[in-house]
Image (tube, rainbow, N blue to C red; front, side, top):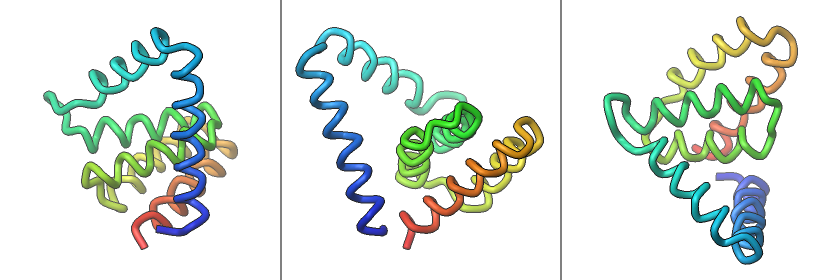
Length: 113
């Protein structure tokens, strides 16, 4: 994993922790929602994280793209699966979707290297 992306992921987690210190109830509820939404069910966690990447790409949230790409990788998502999901982003999002889709693929490669 690239050092720069590790640093960014650590910063994202640090920011979440700081927010949890000042808003413990809200962040605890949010973290519970994240856990419930991504746990194994009829869809594997890897697929759920790939959906989260697709949504992050459509929202244009760079930190979310990085975070959920890392989570998809942790849950065993394959590069080919990510690429198929990103193709849907391009279909649904046109140019902006293509730009953030390319970032998600680059993050996957850097995190997997």
